[in-house]
Length: 269
Image (cartoon, rainbow, N blue to C red; front, side, top):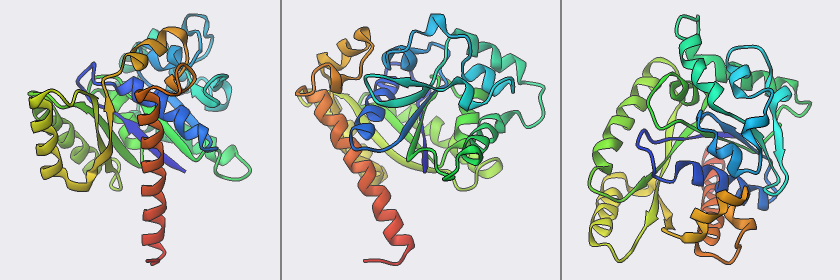
């Protein structure tokens, strides 16, 4: 089981789009996937086809200790993956947890209980966490629970500056809360190959981060923008679109990276 926190404190970089469509693409390869919506906006919830305004129990109730994940998880009927949904109620968790002991590990503890309750000890192959666009307590909970971080980012002027802040936060979490946390990869999103600046920033990213930059690039694509209004991942809205094909390619790249790491640990060539 691999837990990925999908985060960037800058909004509008395709973070939620990536979380929903990567979940659907991994599920399409027969992987068992849980999407945890940790953004009070609840866009990953609605983008997965779940009506956030009618929810009785959400990930908020998990974080404050009132419910377990098993009690709040729903299934995205179209996407064929599970969702721990969120709505604006989640914003209150930031205030409610501030004086609590072990407030940074609430999500980690709840996930440990989910794993323990499963007979196989591995309820999912992948858990994807959609983080809020802020470096706050909720995001720290995600980073503390995760195995690795995926950073979606646009190739634009301020992207590298914001990336530096996020990398520093990851280092602090690694030092104090989660020593094994790593950067899984940087994902170039909303990419327009005709834009010279985007090309230049893309080259800089590759030079600085090397193979941490995914080979897959997510293009700026109208189908990706339209799909959430229908409550479905793009794979079930227009599977022939460039956006759908890109996220399927990303899923394949992530699976292959995981296989490569397992082989390296086992000493295989």
